[in-house]
Image 1 (cartoon, one colour):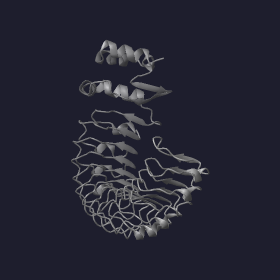
Image 2 (tube, one colour):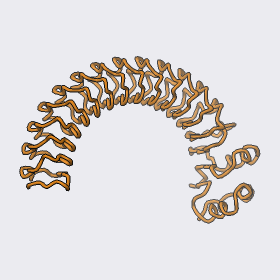
Image 3 (cartoon, rainbow, N blue to C red):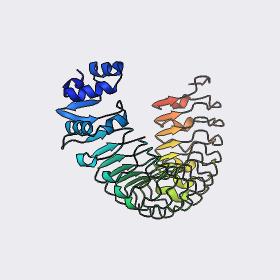
Image 4 (tube, rainbow, N blue to C red):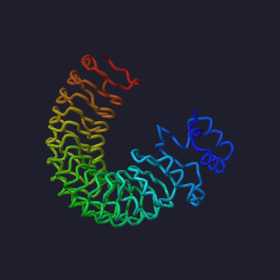
Length: 364
């Protein structure tokens, strides 16, 4: 049963006047309604109502909100609508993603979770320091984030005008992906989860050794990662200028995919999960037998894998020059697809999951 039936007649009448007959009938006869009720209506999703008409009628707005918002519940989604006079309703979660009408967000400082992604007209976020989970992704015009140091989870991805992040060192989870004008990240060593992917101008990461989960994908100007040996999960994919990775022996999960200038990986035998896919200059993998999950796909210069029998999950797909895989009988999961020169897999009967290219004739 549609919960529109549960609405007061005057509210129902206004909704009817704002919708086409077809849309109204669909809402009335199905559960795809504007309002969803659990004892009282907990969510108001006003994507069906024209914002100008809704907000022009102040009395109707207040009546609807007072009816659907109970003080002990607390989620509200007003996509594409304005923000005036909403703070008084004591709602803890707001989603204003893609709301072009949102400009002044001063009333939202007491909200627990706030999504303002794609709100291009928001420029001043100084009042939002009390928000715990704050999404400002694609807010292109934001520059000053100095007031946001107490936010727990902060997403500033695709905010290219954010240059100074010196006040954000205590944020627990910080996403600065595609803040491509950012250079100085020296204050962020206390962040637990830090995403700096596609921050092309970041060169110095010496202060980030205490970060637990660090994403530096496509930070193409990085050359020195010697301070990052204590990072738990480290993504260095497409860091093309990187050559020396010996200091990363203590990293638990390490992604070096497409780091094509990395040659020596002898120090990485203690890494638990290691991605070396497309590292074309790697020849010697003899030190990697203790790695639990190892991706060597498209490392076509690797020919000797005799030391890798202790690896649990091993991807050797597209290692074109590989011939002898007899030593891999104890590997649990082994991918040999597109290893065209491997023709004898008879020794691999003990492999639990064996993936081979079906177009190649193999002797079992």
